[in-house]
Image (cartoon, rainbow, N blue to C red; front, side, top):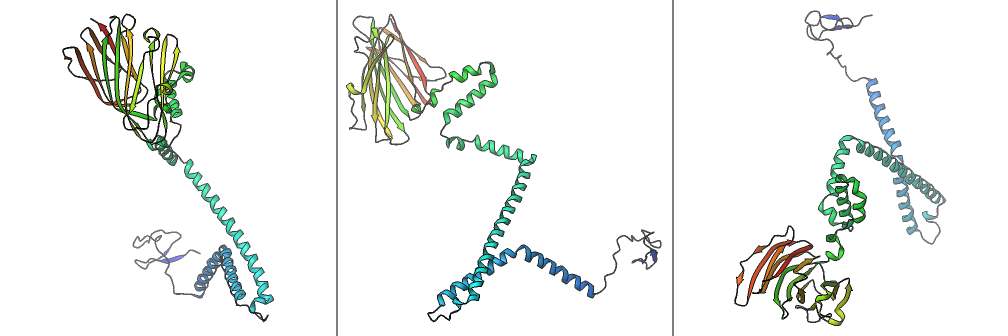
Length: 389
């Protein structure tokens, strides 16, 4: 039998199964809702039953918490009964029922803990699956990749590392491997970076002042070069360290080991004295004589040094004087004085720019000055070419 309904707009009776709209006024019959009657006994029972089901479901899901609460409450009662027990033997604490309930409470408590642990592990598993789902999604994978790259390539990350030499080597080799894969293995074998050697970054030099006094000796073939250097060693701490440097000359210019002559002072420490016998080690390497200076400095994070080196060169064999340093230098000045019978040409090292002052032509010698107020990295700094005129 077809369902007859009444249009709510014009009160016309229509068959809803056949007609979607009222034939009289065109009102949409699909949007009509049946009129709700008042409260009925069935509706009230259904409402009460839904509440009971929700309560029962929550009760079962959280039964372990309820049992835990009951067990803990009973344990508190048991402890109170224990302290209230007297010597008469009639206390509640000695009751068999109380003792039995204690065992039951213990069993319930253990079961509750076990159930809570299982639920906790289940939650962890659910979280783990959800976390995996998020991570493998393209949206979050790209974001995480960018975030991780930004962290691992930041200065803070590198400052926390203790293997910067290795990181530098990997980065450098990666760059050359991409450009020259055919010689990668050779580069990997021979690569070396003096700048990142640990002894090179233990300290640096500041306010480096060099003075050269160059003059021809009596035989008119040798020039004697006196090099006076003043500078400050800057360290990060006051730990002991070995301060080292070396000077080398040709055997023919050593005058039977007399040259180079070396002396130094620690201007801000009276306790550190130069000991030529113990602080200088001499060795021969091919046609050269090398004098190595090694001195233990301690107790300060700055040391003001004054160093004097005197050496000789035969102008017929060698007209070049080279200065290089394996430490960072912050601010350098060079003063060169030479006799009227000489000409000295100053040649900066590659990519090192110096400012030049005008040559001063004095009565007995000429003087020229150069300076650089920036930072000079380890390596060669300049050359002096000495010519007899």
